Amino acid sequence: MVRERRSHGPGSPPRGARGLRRPRRPCSGGKDGTPAAGAKRPGSGRGGGLAILAILGLFLASTAAAQTTLRIGLREDPDVLDPTLARTYVGRIVFASLCDKLFDIDEKLQIVPQLATGHAWSADNRTLTIKLRDDVLFHDGEKLDAEAVKLSLDRHLTLQGSFRRSEINVVQAVEVVDPLTVKLSLSVPFAPLIAQLTDRAGMIMSPKALKEAGAQFGTKPVCAGPFRFGERIAQDRIVLERFDRYWDKAAIHVDRVVFQPIQDTTVLLANLQAGQLDLIERVNPTDAPAIKRDRRLRLVGGEELGYTGLTLNVGNGERAKTPLGQDARVREALELAIDREAVNQVVYGGEFTVSSQWVPPGSPFHLKDLPAPTRDVARARKLLAEAGVPAPVVNLMIPNNPDLRQAGEVIQAMAKEAGFDIRLQATEFASALQAAARGEFEAFLVGWSGRSDPDGNIYSFASCKGGQNDGRYCNAEVDRLLDAARATPDTAERIKLYRQVAELYLIKERGRIYLWHRKNLFAHTTRLQGLRLVPDGLIRVHGLRFGG
Image (tube, helix red, strand yellow):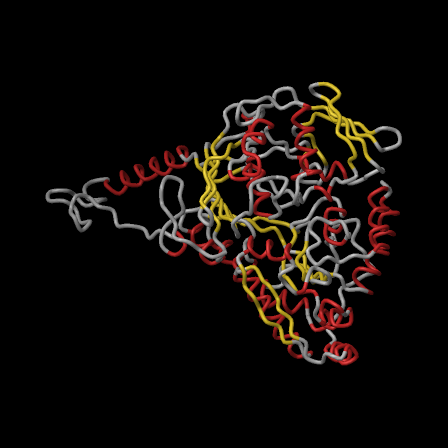
């Protein structure tokens, strides 16, 4: 999240501290802002005050009505804008305006059609037939059809470096039945498949653009969403322009969306308060009181589907060859050295939910008999002594934003009392993800935004075949259990299987340390109306408009 100098063209970020503009004094003719010779001061003369108020009211009303650009502040700069290769939460926020999916979810986590009109399973749950809309165009004017769906799904499954492969790898073949029908054949029944298609695995890209751009597709993506790609300046802005031929264009009420990455939460909020942004995501809970006091702003939110925790390198290259990576006792000692609730109170004002699981307490798959372990420094020291490393050094990589840096510092101080020497490495977020994938880390404090089905929170990270298993944890029995949980639609049976996964992955081997579940907190100007709160935390532009 290294900041760069920001340019200030139309739709560009504000100036000053990360773009914050300072208000100017109005000029009425004189060079210094004083009234020109012979000009009356505002409000002078009979009824002048009322006239000024009336004019001001008309001006504000016309400004609100005229605003056609939605300015959204992001906590990080997204990675590549390629649905097959992307892996950031902020990228998913951009994709929500850029790339429609086969299916979506609503406020109650119900799956709803988007590019699809419906679906049907075969009797053995090994074939999924999807019907498509007949009125969808890509941003390049090409028609979306079954051939395009097949091409995108095949690309997700086969492209080198795909993060979607492990999400839908049970799909053995994608068949075009007719121009508006595709059939997916599975190797085994797969309960989470539709849920996976509500995210990037279900995003369909223009075949023409894929052919022309090749490996550079992410620099100028062409999809079938309400907005088309305009421009991107790294660490500065992403601009999307309204697509006038969008299939659901009646639901779109702004002409442009500008995403501006600002990792400093104080500056992010200051830009909102100054009117330079209209909406910001992942508000720091400690800023909530100030937002609630501001009558021009509104704070909304709810519990996320995901988690924040420590990814541990146990098998990804040379950096895994440490006491932390090779000995579960050292990993257990680190977990016992951390007081989750204390971190929550100090950094987040107690607003988050502490946990040691991959799904939050509101999920039906949350294991109620598996509470987060309490801090036990004495036990942690004993475990380190048994492991023969009473003072292990651990390099902890942290995304370079204020609250996670503070959380890292609190964890560092706590772990020191147990004997750990935690060395913090603040790293720009997209760079940190790339380093983690290469195995250039020992521990990584990072969050996952979550999925509606629990498989989306665990499989890619804990399976030997997982596309986002940066620590390279691998246990054949855990894989068997995860595969079995994928294959059964029965919730009770899946919970039993996930309980066995937890026994191995979390308790015996400490493959990852889950810490807390955030709240998806958004703040926006009161003039912005129609924001829908969906538990995945994405910003859907459908229905958003500016009012008076």
